[in-house]
Image (cartoon, rainbow, N blue to C red; front, side, top):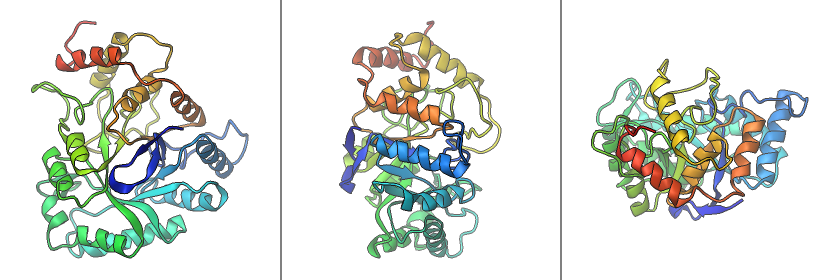
Length: 337
């Protein structure tokens, strides 16, 4: 599998990496039909197949399945080879502001215990950011203030618990940019896909979706490795089926797919038919952007893994298709196609 530089980390990361999240499910509820085996054996075979195909990083988090994803990875690590780069996350409770550094240290300790390891390659802040705290977002004041969140992450780095520090660039875009410009972070998980490429593509002022403008620009300027998340937009770009595990970008709970499904239909009607599935077109779009270091795969079953792996041996989306898409974005999906 082709590899790219993960920013200033020095890691040569595979273009596709394996996500361990709730939406994907391979590390939580794997499809065992392909191996007629137990769930644990299905997880092992799926992950080993990914590694054999060139994937060299697993990205997990304590919130995925209430720790089940990390526990699965911890059990798998001694059984798989070569050992992949390992990335996990720290989740801070935004409404419990006492001893935030202590929360970081406890989150790290609990993750290492579940992962059955003494260190990871990348430790990422999972909280979306905002100028002020609310029930879900972490304020930049508490991130960089005397509370010690950044200090605690840097302490973990100095102690060899992690080699690199990352963040999740969700929430308020200006707050994310402020965080990136401090040079405290080596990597960033960035929302970017066919439905909303605003993090790395010029968009009109009346853009109807969340505007992540300039995030990839700032990452490139600061040497921050870009880990592309939500490439399938909660499954809308991958399948017409819904698993019930879909999570919106900026909130939790129920949300309406109708508008995004209509935009997706417009995109795939607009693109020339080159024989790819919609999921493969979504991956080709992301991989056509050289400023993206890797794409985090959220996969529901083994067939989807195979479908994604097939893309890496194919050419990226051509400039002619990208120009068509840019025209669609410039018109805010108002073109009659």
